[in-house]
Image 1 (spheres, rainbow, N blue to C red):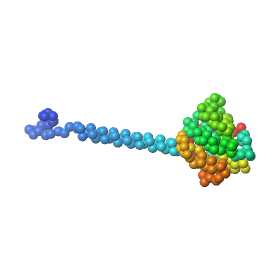
Image 2: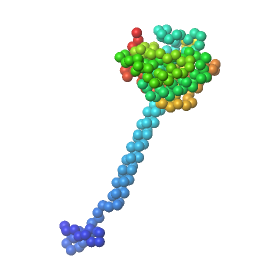
Image 3: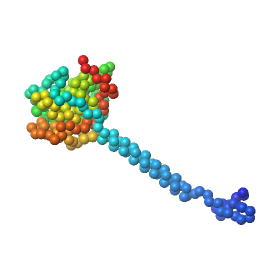
Image 4: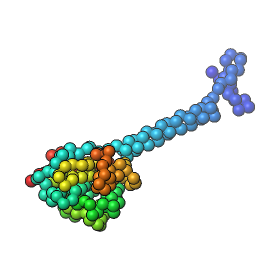
Length: 227
């Protein structure tokens, strides 16, 4: 079939009758542009939803004992309530937790014995555990910072996620467990810190537990070692 170009248009000669042949042009370009745009918007939406789910997805809750664990090497709470914070030294999300602890201690420093335990897994050096997160926690007045070798104390307190915070009263009863950030890596007012301020201020709290936002303390549960 012969083709003839006339005035920018393409014709096919069928017999002696020229028939106009439509060649894809701007309409096809617009269609492809629209398809690409829709795909891009969909990809961005999926990415944002994944990020939102990560930031707002809590870690595993602690299986905290209702009574102070007698095997713990921390001093039992007799004179003042005891706050125990479990942290992974390499967890970036926990910087917000330490910042919230600093804010909490400005209000309750003389009412609580605060202990911050940094996980030191088997085979990891002390310098690995004493990260910049350790330095930030150690700079908070009134806070006792310790290494948790093999995760023994984390296991005794049932911790699973960095940022797990527990409060025991002077009778050894669990009064609060959970996190003190509103989402992963975000500082600001949150239910956990408010609950602790209320309890330590002599009041009651309607929030005995909150979600914990942080990294897993143990990749596998058998990584914890209790001597």
